Length: 256
Image (cartoon, rainbow, N blue to C red; front, side, top):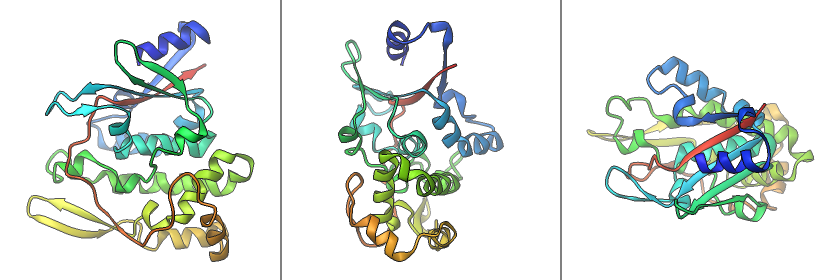
């Protein structure tokens, strides 16, 4: 992240004018009410930033020595939600990927073709709370905390996609795979076993009615799927038991 900030300061704007929003420090980790408010504000933060930097150089996780890179970054639910918040508010404008050798990293601006390769289905990704079987302090499932954020982003895409091709690409994927993007149920894992819990239920159908999206319109968008996969059968969200890596941190660099 420091490398990216220095590069932007060198080529774009003085260091004194750069302000950084970093998820690990800008979202409260212990204060649950404050954390919930910060999570709900993700679309606002993503929409206000001038630069969104995915910091995912090659590294090894401090726990378990697992390799971390851009590929592992894209498997994490929180990382997908941050990316989704960015593209659903302002498109891929100002999005950069920092990857490769940490001693000589590559900092590249995202293209629509590269962005299309990154999965954005948040609720089928990896979450630490699920990997830890929702033992304290992970008793609340992050997927349930992110429901309202996902609905807010979806409504924004529906309203603004005509004027932004990036938003149109995401909306196409959402409509083609609604049961994948917004799973009706999820598997809640604990040490005593698994249970199926309601996640979105019928909320998306209700949202489509409110937003004025007919079944025919949804099918029309889904037929043009490009960036986020083809239509699949309805599913229940489940995640890998692997603990998500924490070294690939996404950060928004904001110029004021």
